[in-house]
Image: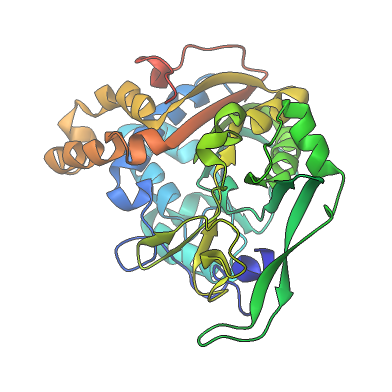
Length: 356
């Protein structure tokens, strides 16, 4: 998964500056339109009123579209805030980083840095929209004789493939069993699940680099009790190509995610329980955890003033796409963490914090 997504020459994300949208392979909240950034800008304004730092860090920024929408909204609504923001973009893909100045365009003056790693330290707000689900995962399966890990091996070629297949073996690290033990998860024989050690390491690192401020994590996933249950007993590792997904395949040695490596997106649902626990162990406080539906509902009143958005009718229509049950609204969760900011009643919590 690491090679298929991030290899500098052949990796899926390394070979293009943008992968989402109508011409891409999948659809994100950013693709709905500028309204997503405008809604987030309203929440950022409240957060920046609490912290003195004005660093806006976007991790997994791609070509910078979300930050561009946020900055343009800030320039129209709150010029003083706009002029104080220090934008720091973090993106692994070199082509995407190269495209950021053009995407930012008339708001590129706020860009302070663009890198493949987080700033050494920052004060303000970090946003990660659909980042954690793209981290490489370990896939494990429970057998009668204990936990086994799923590996990729060379195999006789079939038409149209690269001669790759899966094979089971002993776990590559005791951290996998420890991860499940820490959650109190007991897999039944035959259950196949993914473990995202990288997400836990990333949140720990981000927490240590944050001096004072907030983290906003938006992704699809579940609490551990749901993710590691019979509902997802065949795992969640999925491939996307041409807006079509191919989900888990029980026991197949040539699963869909192994076909055409480097030419399709690979993703797995996020374990928010472990991410939150790792953040809290580093001194962060959980401020909110909710479906994206309720996050958007709490911020929609900020769009009541038609002067604050370029096309109010279009914005409200697009907002419905962010709210739809079974779509982006309920599949995506929003986790907000804070450091040194207390427990503020943020605007996004106005409609509660339900998680489905």
